[in-house]
Image (cartoon, rainbow, N blue to C red; front, side, top):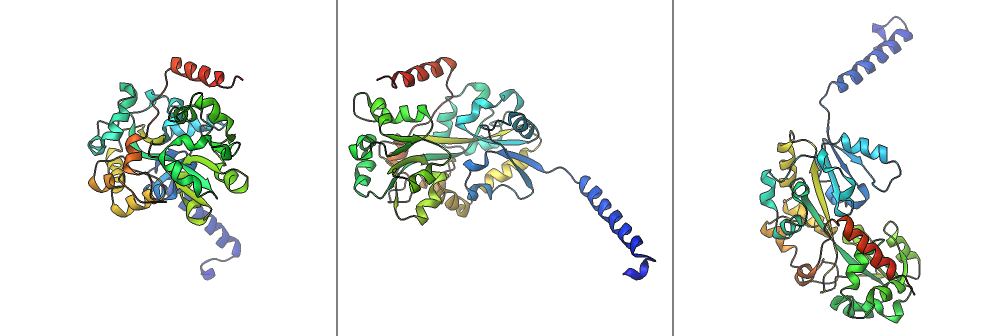
Length: 332
């Protein structure tokens, strides 16, 4: 090849020009579809379903780099977000999504939950996943049977100072209402070792903690590799974490529908469920995944699903009431 050039310098210059031409050509290609998501909330089996020619942009609403998040979300056609962070979005920036044929796929559970939002929010939120919280018990098989029955077991003296709770007063308050005891919230909080969302499993595995309450999708892989851990879903039900899809533009309706439809493939459904992720669609095969009766690692039973609960967006007045109730429970 060097025979075509009189000097090595000419060959290198030719190589530089070729590289510049290649980069220029790539710049002329259509922009990839971008989807922004809170990466740590999604199991690998779900992220793997996102079309390969889409670009996944990571966002973190807890980050102090709020301006960077705004730039990322404003440049993405689609946003994935869980119900705990919905109020971080400006709904005026998004298009109505539930006018698409997709709405016909939703099951009763997701349609009922959508009804708890106002009309503007409801028309722009598409439920794409529901994740049940679960109880993980470490090195204590004796607790499993009582935990399956109700949440009352959390007040056991053996668990004082050995429970890791979510860092959410609303979730803890909702669990306390299931416990058959006076002053249940105050008693429940006195059982806590700590309140954490980010490193719950590390704390449970590497400390004296005996119990942790976490989203199923964030712990399924640990359950398969650590024999000390047992999974329990009380028949009284569990809190549910919902995930939604929002669209900034309706020009990509066709590719969006194609992706959503692909999720109903049985192999994909099985992989998602094995990692704690349930699709809230109405097909018979998907609905069969809500009727598990097997233990120990197979998800909530049909009875547990029936008794589980979700968290609609709070009004400002409701937020104040919740904060006051939480603070009052701290008083001696």
